[in-house]
Amino acid sequence: MTTRELDAAGITDPALREAYTHCRRLNARHGKTYFLATRLLPVERRPAVHALYGFARWADDIVDDLESDTPPERRRALLADLNHHLAEGLRTGNSPEPVVRALAHTAAVHDIDHRHFTDFMTSMTSDLEVTDYPTYEHLRAYMHGSAAVIGLQMLPILGTVVPRDRAAPHAAALGEAFQLTNFIRDVGEDLDRGRVYLPADLLAAHGADRSLLLWSRATGRRDRRITAALRAAADLTRSVYRAAAPGIPMLDPVARPCIRTAFILYGGILRAVEEDGYAAVHRRAVVPRRRRAAVALDGLVRLTAARLSATRTRPPHHPPSDHPPGGTRHPVSPHPAPRRSA
Image (cartoon, rainbow, N blue to C red; front, top):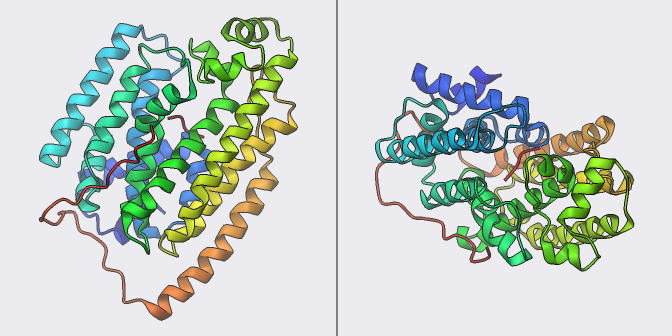
């Protein structure tokens, strides 16, 4: 299937094909939910999404890999090296680092604003220093770079039926909603990394704090105050999903089944946390495989209908080549409101 995707996208250079293939492997291995949704995109658009995910995952693993005993100073050096490769890759259109090579090509072909990548790296760097957030507004400032910009990077690939700046706030909100979902699901794992992404003011409103979370993680004992805080965080996250939802009809019809499927699957993670009694400090909730398959099947039906409609109403698609077009960049403005894969 990789060959078919690359051929459809017009990517013929062997080194570039290998770079995109590397990114696809990262997506398939680590991004179970995201990869499943990506399968519902038109085949020629998938490599670009793999490139975005592969780069984000590579940076995320430098910062957060629990299976590695890499000391903080080494992680910092590796992230700085990746940041250097990113700047050079975006400037020259090429890089010895596969994830950057694919990303630079995707950014050029789809005219993605480079600020989204630099903002992302700023948030990744902050993860090496910042271990908690006093308020939700502080967390949103972090999530702008770690999540909102991912939604903004995706827009040029997905396509819109409205001016892009109109869809941008909803795309940014969806990135935030996905990340907030992962923060709730991964509370225990994040504690093991030395971080708390639930805002301190939200915890305090329910009588909880970092020390209570650490006690619960260490002893395996539950506490109603933590349960209440996690329930409130889930309610907050659902409100962000509601803010994101109007953006789905603004997308190219053939891209909507992918994003709608991701929307439902990630929302299903919140449901799984709830069904597990908000025990996220102790274990990661998992969406049942049958439920995931049912959502994916519905997405496939919608995709088939959208493709049939597009075939009747649109001219043939001409995939981009290895060589990006020239011309003036038209950046997507980041959403004014202020990361992790699934």
